[in-house]
Length: 342
Ligand code: ADP
Ligand code: ZN
Ligand code: MG
Image (tube, rainbow, N blue to C red; front, side, top):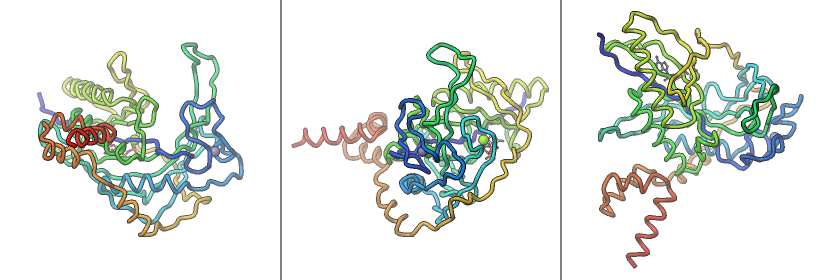
């Protein structure tokens, strides 16, 4: 039987940590009374004009700088058309070419070995609202619409297909979450849906150059779920190929309770979203001083801090890893250490 290798690419959506939405002044507060954080802009009333939140641009650029991205000074927005029951205007304001950030990278460590994962892009876009199909455990025979989340700023990060196992995917997401939490640009809490991930998985015979047929698992909301879904998909795809079957490009859903993926729809080629420049948001250039100022705000990141904890405090790799996993714990440790020394 052929030996296969795994190829994974991730698309990660992170809610940007700003007080107000990306194109209006409504609050982004989580858990507010349904439809209370809305206005003419984020409920898509005819003729309402979006106004860009500078803080959201800052957050995306700052995240890009921390991940070694090239920042594209030209800031442009596009309309991505499709029918969203939870976005009344039936298109999403997003970025096509160029995104705010191109070609970044992130270092991960798996089994003691460091590996660089290249990241294609990070762009800024708006989130959709939420359809509610049940209240508590009661299933409704109608759907409710909550637009509190519509128009909340998102950064979408897309990796190159360079991740080669579920373990690397797990480390990538942990490291990304930790960096973004250090920066404060997103809260990244997967429980509150502030970080969501689409996972693309394929396998190919070892030595083959071309990528295999990929499956996309949509809307994963836990890191361990991502790991388990990839592990399951690898085995499922191997079984199909080894029994002489063919894989189809499709979108699948992770059923966490059963521990399996299920087919949702086939994905023949790319959907045509008919992107066109957003006429209500004119392109503009980010000043050099804007980017330089944000660069100054990117301070010591988790990896560097971990190395310093090992060196300065004589900690084991494992302890330093834990103590630097969030900025709060790391600050607490350092303050306690310094207080004890005195
Ligand atoms: P789409 O927008 O249709 O989802 P993209 O070409 O933007 O498609 O790719 C999305 C993600 O899928 C990227 O992270 C990319 O690295 C990954 N990807 C593309 N082809 C493959 C493949 N054959 N196997 C695994 N991942 C892939
Ligand atoms: Zn609004
Ligand atoms: Mg995709």
